[in-house]
Image (cartoon, rainbow, N blue to C red):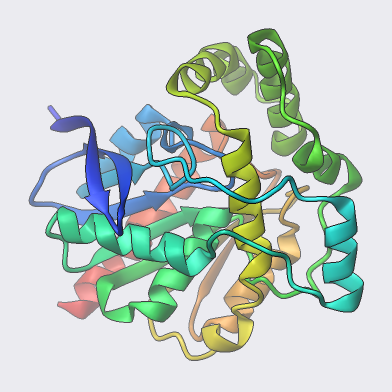
Length: 304
């Protein structure tokens, strides 16, 4: 029976961070870092258990401004005008905090848990945060897995029109509207039909809704991504074993984002998952979990 530590709050980097642990306390520590506007439960319970069963102490947590972690304040909704100024005039976007602050949250949580170094697995914005941790605190990272993420290189093609519209849409006002939006969003992000996941969507939406929404916080997270610029040049000097996983049909962070990440990090391995969009659908889990398992345990064996 796998041990499980229910959600708890840690005081880290001056804020509250909600975290949960799956697996043997003596196993290799592996932190899962979620993406923009996504709570830690978007790392599905069963996904976490399956990863823990491979010999990891799996820690998932809510980033700042989401779920049960601290909600900050300040900042306005991002406008299309600001995005145009950033794109064409290279005028930086104002932000309350940046990815480096979210990287420090991750390190702060590791400190509270007494973890000197860990394997980092980040999805989307979580991949960007994981890259930032690896760049700024390399001694704390045993291996890096960057999933459906990018380097911040402005030359990467933008999201599809449909995915971009979804990102910029005003937040839903009612529970019903939220459920409808949740189903529609994941349909766009998954690209294609995934009946197993679609059957679970209503329960996932309910759980997310009950843990609490923070639309203003999602806006601040988006600003943090845009204000943090490109990591590409710095990634050229990264010496941490890196695996990059990306879907071939990702509509939000285009496949070029993953390819650019792998090309920027010396010795990085690239796994392109056929038919995967900007999501981790159940049928893709075996391939993704196998890859993380092999990569992280491989890095641990080399380090030993």
